[in-house]
Image (cartoon, rainbow over all chains, first blue to last red; front, side, top):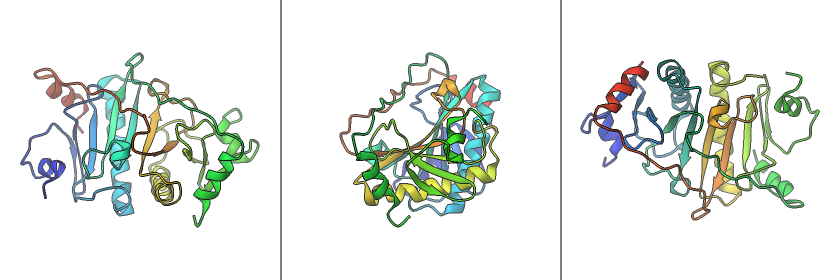
Length: 134
Length: 133
């Protein structure tokens, strides 16, 4: 498979590995949003969160929690952001499902996206859409 | 927590647009959305952050996030979405009750990813040593 993360998992491409177990691997993003920015991925190739088995997703989030704590302890940061981007419209560049964990610092310039409000009846419209058959 | 806005929503003291509810989890619309259909998924029990939350509840949360993500794609006309947790105030966490955001996305919606940097010689090694489990 011509997948960069699979190549990292198979050690065909080198990486800064932070964690590894039977199911999950964690390594540095080499183009980090901040120093220590880590990628957490399943070892088995799955394109996106919709196709991953729930138990594997649960294994991933447990690793995210552990690494987050290691960032607080090891880097002395006061917080971190956890991201999972689904599909290219949401900036998923590598189609092998992964979480980003980004260590954060005051004044690091990483801004939240702007928020807006709902117009009259819009929230109800989206509520109906989202609760359909859920 | 008496003064926590999400606890008040969970208790029904403040109205919300509820998307999903079970014994441990509630999901509702963010009323100040980044994009229409922006959902928050919270544990009903108050945990401040990733460090406080029980792993089992965190795992239940991500399972619910997965289900809602599929609905966002099917029913809201999004071609993708971002899932995120801002863990602690330095990371932009405004309400200190752990929550996932699910933000529906469309091509060309103007929401830009953060700028990427590069490591200097030896820097990644040094930092990896500090995090490595």
